[in-house]
Image 1 (tube, rainbow, N blue to C red):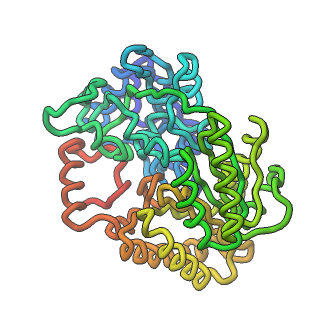
Image 2 (cartoon, rainbow, N blue to C red; image 1 turned 135 degrees about the horizontal axis):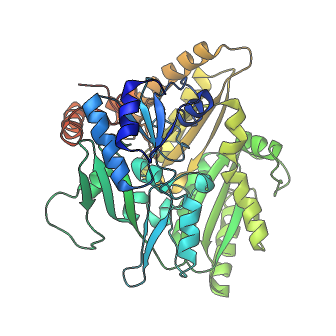
Length: 463
């Protein structure tokens, strides 16, 4: 490391791990978007809160930008370091610090992987209910910074519902201890909730106190094949009315094709345009009979063409793989992604407009979409044809995203449901937020990070 600024940092923190080989810079400088060429200054891996504070104070003195980094599974460019920033990776701060049986909380460092949180809660016969397919690689700090949702939002809500307290190093280097695990706290502004979803632009999460819950009752998983798009909301309304839903996820035949090619096993014979994986409480015989009756009614109404119900845990896992394996099955294609949401009541009208828009604008391009119907969140993956140059492909996708953002605005939706704004969606923020809101966001950012060192260029441009 020949940069004098880094030499000063190393002298200030002799025990700090600093990485700078080309392979390390590339590995830590990008996320799953794979659209920007990584070009960080170096990678810092602090081991404790004191080191994080010292790095932030050094960065203020030297005017070095910092990109906070967790599992880097994000899809919006929020963890990209492409302009000489210092990547501050929290992967070494990966310990479960405390379990409080009375409060039913788990205190963890930000680099703890979500799967480890699940396992730690299960050791105490409790659950941390936020869950999604990247559980084996995403970190709690990253989940908090994007207010991640996942497959069980319909039952448990987003990450923010499960954060009892946060310790955060603000952009000025100050350590903030937010809410301290309190259930009731009406003593002014709740900065904890402001930091959740801020994508590392206000502060760096260095510790989190997570709320835990009772395990749900035994459940069953069902796969449904649907004849058309309109049936999605009819089946959802029926199942939500009759069953206690834990999840209600849908995907298309194109998505299924990719998952099956990636190694999943077909569960229903025949080809259908739409599929649903749903999980619901099935604690007793009555609940199971109710589920079967709901399925039969949907069949009689023509809303469902076929179905399969898991008879074992392994079968349930196999059914869930059909939905959870989609993102991994598409990764090699480096898809252009949209992650959007509308109110549940607006889903039917929006789906029709969206499908018309995608069909019109991508006549010769494969589009894979799926989502969380139960919370109005849809994921759109556009796959680049081999004969189309990447620059031209991105330009076409951004043109369509602009049209999609206008459609979302008409329906009162959001251009980012659960992946954040980052770099990818920054140009479309105005479709979701008013000019007054964005001005306030810039003002808040200035207060927390007066020198603008934290994740600059992410979420919004400088005002």
